[in-house]
Image (cartoon, rainbow over all chains, first blue to last red; front, top):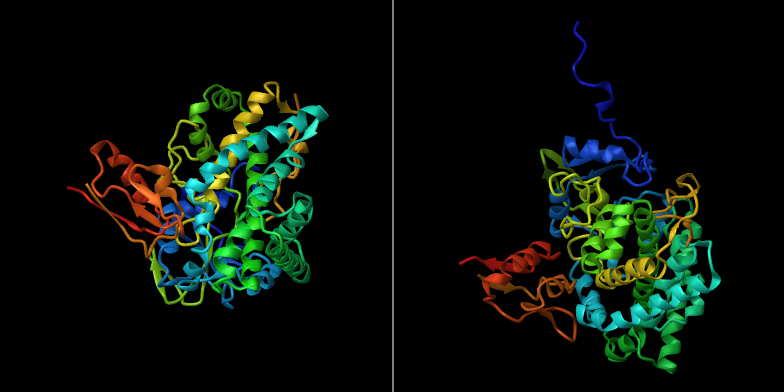
Length: 409
Length: 65
């Protein structure tokens, strides 16, 4: 018999256990690309033995995320798919609109959209720039070497959030501990729930403090516009506030760490970012596309049998919409595994799609548009101070990035 | 080109206002889309198409003339 012309390594495994390990720290697991080539859907097995679907292509991910009639994002649904047992507990206790379907979702989200409007974020940009200069001043004053991931990448978004929300900066370690404790892949259900509850309790106390002594911040404004008129309960606001706090810290921190690692490893990227400030916006979109920090969200449950690309998803089955796979989809991005600051990366789905698309995306963009060039301008000799092998990547987290980034200048 | 927006569908992501501020704005009270020009100049047409394509809640519809 003639040997098969098909290389043995290309056969797709049958419903493998999800999540997968990355082979390369800069690329999603290679199985995403192989699954994407074979079709828009790929069956996997979760920690609890249940089957779920990975949606791997840009077009189908957008289609599912805008089909609220046939797919639910209600995290309280017993069929909602999760990557860990701890996440089940967190999901069942999610009270913020991130875990709601419409109409409840829109009713709550609309109480907060103006706080993140493009106009308001533009007005905040000078303050963001001042905060950026301040944290770089501190870095300079302490002198090299430094761990950029553990210091500036944490402190900068924390100070911005503190300014926006009105939460004391001194509390940022506690807030991050709660966010990270909830987003890990290794916690027990009790630990994850405790962290989720602690952050909501923290925000409930912040509401009390702001009612007693209002400031020029989101918390005080929402108390005035929605809590006092009886449109939003203090407990619901506490859950939403906790969601905003954790979302605003962890994600930007990881984009700063991973983004700077990629730029410092590549002279071409670094030169383009340092010497062409007018192309910074495009560079930020490309880094957002390439890095895609959020790994295992968004998720949906099918509300009825739905056919996608010749495969039937049964009612009650869960789906993971793999943003990192959409952002490497060859159908949308030419040569997708290459970072190219000259490309139009605006089609990326890093902030998700549909009604749940990131509320704080404009803030995140402005933070990154300010910080990357400021670091290169203030520290022209900035360089990595450790080989790649010494950098610890966040394979243990649901939001990807680096645990450490040793630099010198 | 004629542009239509659906404030009911809009989730206030603000991406249209960021992409083409000449055509799209956001309401002060809740960040929901406001159409500033229903018939934008030809030079804005590519950016308006892009904004419509990127709208996460598909609240922008374009009638090409």
